[in-house]
Image (cartoon, rainbow, N blue to C red; front, side, top):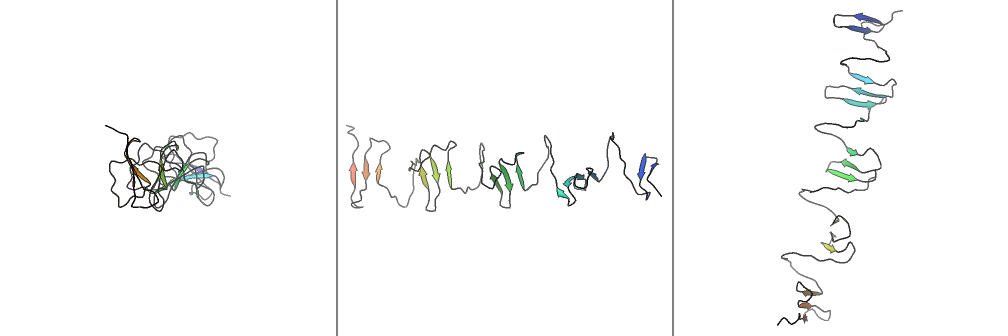
Length: 205
């Protein structure tokens, strides 16, 4: 019965199986070499992880169905990453999904949308239900179907809009007043739209 053999060539040693010159398998407790040229590195079992070296780079897979595997490293220095999602090591934290329209930030390892924190955001457009300050206890702007609503103190009360100039087609309001509480104002009572009550400010003479 033919067995495997070691052939000493000019370049080194070839391990051939029983069907020599087909290459065979070398088993050892430890191998100390300067370099390895191979198409595949795999664990000892058929379901273990393996690394293959195609022309395009490196593939990490596991199992008999060549399922993509996991690479664990303290740091990765790469020019680019192509992935469908990226997350923390703890699957219960935030993660980012890269879909066809763009990117979506999720929280708590779920599909719920999370929070994006940044020093500055430069975008061409913003679609959102509301916008507010960082602590959540100050003013906020909501965007309902009818237009814009300004709230104050993190609650449901209407807040104040401060602008240099407003160009509007119409104004619905209970009263109009100067910038300070001591300035005069105009009230619009429910008794009639045409009737106005003018409240004078303090005597400034």
